[in-house]
Amino acid sequence: QNQKDRAQQKKEQQQSDEPEEIEYYNNGYVRDRDRLRPVVPRPVQPVAPVRPISPGRPGSR
Image (cartoon, rainbow, N blue to C red; front, side, top):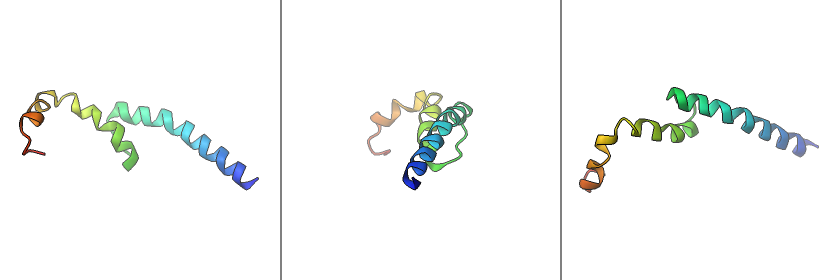
């Protein structure tokens, strides 16, 4: 039963984490290191002019 309880808790945490992640993603604020990944594509939009410079400059990365 402990395993089942833990599985349910994990599922509940994931469910309550999904909407929270979207809110943080919309806010552009990162609370966890894992949430930093979904927020990465957000700042890439305003940095569009810097994106074409990345492939043009192989030594940059």
